[in-house]
Image 1: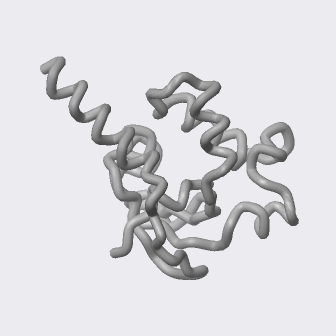
Image 2 (image 1 turned 30 degrees about the vertical axis):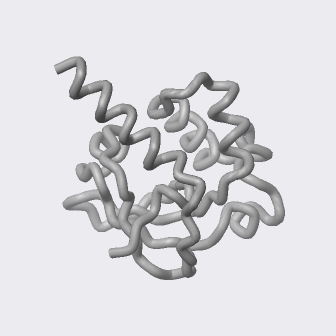
Length: 129
């Protein structure tokens, strides 16, 4: 069990921190979260939810990046909290790394709900459907 858990964590980390992702992300297109996420499972009822991309963080936040708005924007606070919950790197490395990665604002609809909620996700978390 422990070996399997270690392998799963290693696999998730490699997927999450994949820097060779040259996929072109388009506005108003649907994608799927590519790795299994306990966070998304608890919040939306799906480990790999489908998401609708609105735009990159700097467009949504009027020229600011997500980390500039953590104190004033709830979606940014939630994104930071999710990183703290899901990342397996030391937090200093993780946050420094996250500042150089593309981040998109997406809408996610929970199962059995007519409402969508906004979240920030890394580009390399997105997969084509």
